[in-house]
Length: 295
Length: 215
Image: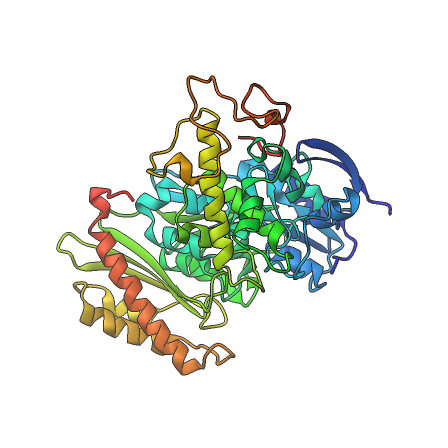
């Protein structure tokens, strides 16, 4: 299949891209294109104009400052996968990147594009939720910061305004005793998740859980947080009994649908198991962060 | 067509300026505008990897990119493999490996497999089996069951190592003896070495600057 005809723009600055969004009616934004190009090919998307943002060099970064890990809109999955900073400090990101699609797609697809695509089966949304991250958008009226919790609306639908360009994802720099992990169940390499669980734990000086974040993949209409499980964890000491109960609560709160890969009951059990595993890894890594154990 | 524009692609070391519509996929530009039909279209969905080419050193699926997005890029396709210096004017060690180890049956996925294999060996000259399987995980084969493809890439890694040794390069720390490999010659001695293949080890070659990759 070939896409329908479209006009094409290749802005070189964010401002240029935003003014194009403002002035044009029927348009699509093309970043990594690993979801957008198939949509165009199958004519699921038939925009008059495609705004290709790949020439906006200022969006091509993956960096950390005092406060945030910042992921620019053009950072590819492979950039996260190959980053030493990520390997050293951001366990959930390091777990997730190699599990996205396949090597060729990871060389093109962008993390921010995946978030904007808002596929409930996408992995990155769960990670962003577990980290209580933020989405930075640039619109005609300037910059707007959207907490991850307020971003996902429906499958493939977000609270991003139609004249806004998603420019950056960010998550807080890990605390001294923080660890995170992602576990994903898929039928075979390259598949979307049947279920996935991202966990982040921040421990206090006594080793109790000060803050817990859990994001779930492919078990609801969007990536969702397992708030009941999070609440159960906070104030407690990490341990297998505690994590078992958290897994149960995450499973109870999830709403998977039966499909050809498994029924809802099975997927709930998988949410339970994956959440326990992610929590166990996160707890272990929380104890390692301070000592900076590199790979 | 009204909104066609000019782009420049360097493919296998040769610069081409072509006119493409914005909607034209890179794989169609390669196959139809440049008549390089070694790059295949398998699934039309971005799953199978038959259209894999190497763009600026990285393997990508050329059916998931518009040709305009590759403007100014260096591309390598399967047609460029025989021009690489390590092919010594014949088959590239990867192609040789696929022949020796029966890495193909129908051959449809082979160009994409070769590209993924090439990208892997450029990064990691001595991959283990897991690393090879990961590298070709974006390429589907419906004939071989993959075992022989993995073996083909292993063969190529060994072969490239012996080519490098024959070229006077530092031999990686590996206990295999030269007699176990198919090197055409003996051991390099202070750069005074000729493997007997024309235009190969005897001096500078015209091929060395070719091939679509920036190292």
